[in-house]
Image (cartoon, rainbow, N blue to C red; front, side, top):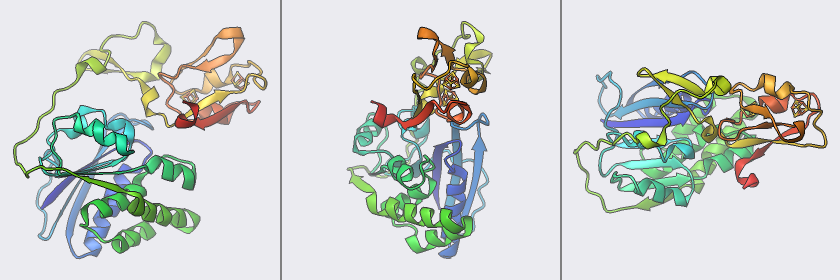
Length: 298
Ligand code: SF4
Ligand code: SF4
């Protein structure tokens, strides 16, 4: 039996990816089981799913603590040590990202024998204008592992989508397969469980000075954990100052409460907390906000 963990962000179809993958294994005559777990119920927050596949019936019902395969649907998660918890030496990491993300992974004390990367965000932005990378990453999984033929994944995708969305997803699957780059490393398979150290310094565990970011902090273990939701973003709002009427409507609608009136009376987002949901752009009566790809703004 092989065990796998999927890491994504709310809205990227992580759970659906696990279900489609299970469907493809079953289509190929294998046994599979999947189930999700949710953290805070919010678009952009971290989401986990677990999958097992085998030639034999699967009796295990627990979460996957020691995955042989990791499938990471969002590049912003690759720098989080938690996702590598328990990863088995000699396993395979398949991630949404670019070649430079291979180095990010190699900085952690994990010993994969294979890392596969595909620029899933770029592909889905080109195909659908979204960051829903689930189907692209299934193509990458097929390419990197050879465990499931692409035709069985196509069958699963056809069961999940219809019409024009189906066409786009079939294209996404194929591009995920074709555009995945595979990097191999010397690494013996090891059953030594690799525990990671929680990187406290990445988080500010203190109460926010004011309730400005009402939706961006949470109480955990009796302490306030400020969530820098800006790292969830793949698009950012850009305000056209010539078109802006300074009405403040965008501030009212922003779910993270991160828009403030600043310089010369314009309402501008704090990018450390703006999660890129696009609600302000939808609600602006003057249509003065455009959502632009992060990498085009750098
Ligand atoms: S809603 Fe639009 S017009 Fe009003 S302040 Fe915000 S950006 Fe300006
Ligand atoms: S995209 Fe707009 S509404 Fe959404 S979090 Fe950013 S500033 Fe707020």
